[in-house]
Amino acid sequence: MYDCIVLGGGPAGLTASVYLARLRRSVIIVDAGLSRASLIPRSYNHPAFPEGVPGRVLLDRMHDQSSRFGVERIVGRGDRLERTEHGFLCAVAGRTLHSFAFIYATGLVDILPQWPDAVELVRNGNLRVCPICDGYEINGAPVVIIGNNRRAAKEAAFLLSFTESVTLATLGAELTDLSPADIEPPLRLTTARLLHHRPLSGDRISLEFVDGGRIDAAVYSALGCRPQSQLAQAVGVRLDEEGRIPTSQHQRTNVERFFAIGDVVTGLNQLGVAMAQGEIAAVALHNDLLAFSGDH
Ligand SMILES: Cc1cc2nc3c(=O)[nH]c(=O)nc-3n(C[C@H](O)[C@H](O)[C@H](O)COP(=O)(O)OP(=O)(O)OC[C@H]3O[C@@H](n4cnc5c(N)ncnc54)[C@H](O)[C@@H]3O)c2cc1C
Image (cartoon, rainbow, N blue to C red):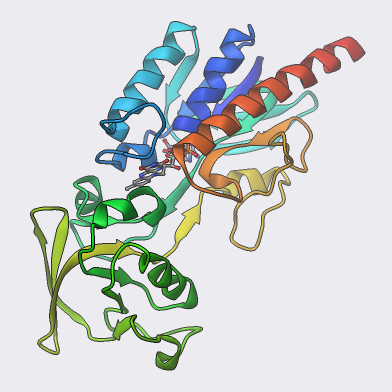
């Protein structure tokens, strides 16, 4: 019986695990190993790294810190989560783990264009997903946003603070909750299907369309994301309309002693936010367990 199982070993879960271990709690991380942070070629906005830091380096350092304080880790996907009389049960890789409390830190998965090299392009910095993270580095270059709805158009408008040339490209998909008239200059719209895409140096992609058009640009995917919240829902955790988990100020969900942190939670998807939420949840959970053991 662990004090806490942390599901998800990205920046959120790893931070929580270090705090819990240093509060002398028994904690185990279950991690499928697909952190969004591992896709960051180099982050320039993460505090304390003036030269920028690759996401992989951050994760390696956090794993090292977590294991130095004795946090156990199972590499695998938790595939069953249940409430039990005393807390929670999580099944992973043929093992069944039990804990008094639970921290849910499974993140989200970005929906990318259906290109065979899409993940590789993200990892290399050619295909972008987060204007807050790397809009600064556009440096006035033309930008293409791939998407076909109001949310993508909003992201396109947001990017006008970094460049004068922004094109929303649907790649042939129907516009959904949007009409062409909603795209006002200086924003541009192309609904043409794509013929080819080719990565260029300097983090750009060359897009050639079937109508003969071609744009060499910094390219963002604004196709949305899938919050990894299904297992939380299985134990009764309430989700918002996007499938993310609303929490209290201390990262509590509506289920007692079940905390949620990081990108799976409603709010800003950033490394620093995920880490801070990990810290807050760990301390709140520690205090809850102190009160709980006092009561029993
Ligand atoms: C290309 C890119 C660039 C970015 N750049 C920046 C930047 O410059 N600055 C910044 O602040 N942020 C940036 N971000 C955002 C940042 O990566 C995320 O905010 C951060 O990784 C969120 O951490 P997390 O721990 O919540 O989720 P994640 O890092 O995604 O970790 C979640 C972990 O949970 C695991 N998991 C999911 N389901 C299960 C399950 N059932 N069982 C076991 N494990 C599971 C996943 O495999 C994963 O390892 C960027 C993201 C991307 C994709």
